[in-house]
Length: 263
Ligand SMILES: [Zn+2]
Image (cartoon, rainbow, N blue to C red):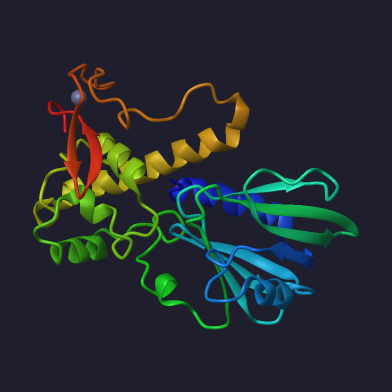
């Protein structure tokens, strides 16, 4: 499932492919992804518009269009974008196709999504899903005092679940939270309201470390031989820091790997 680093990587790609591009034609038949609009209306309304900029907040992308509207995009569980020549065969599971002209050249950007949990919301108003997002750790940075105040309101929840709450910090998912807490040496089961300021500083730096490492891995593409994770998905293997066996616990329905010795 795409988390902040994956969506940021997508934002960089879309900026290279779509910024300043004129949308010549849109093709989609997917009423679920473009809801509440009908696919035909969605395609017609986007035609002839120019993409001015592409922002990201948490796991949401936002394309600003030259008529003042915005296209909000969430990649769901399995969404991503593919860039190709217009004559190339369409990729499998293509759900929305954008035919573009940029700098006098015709290009194609396809939204691919096997499981169809993604969303594309074309609107002039700021949608509530975007307005409800907390600060983005990469774009906005992390204010320790404000974070502590928001965590204090989630007294009963574990720090791991609280970090994944999109209204506390936007974009942190299971992988980023698991890795950041390991980096910080903080037990994921600790109560959110009981985490000290020193621990919060360590978590903030752990989040930056995790996000930057993951972004570098995505930028390396095929050259990256192994995944960038230290503990995620590695229960039963030795902790890279202390050698103790990594354990697994389920918090808020999500499997979390941690080191019972140094976290
Ligand atoms: Zn350890």
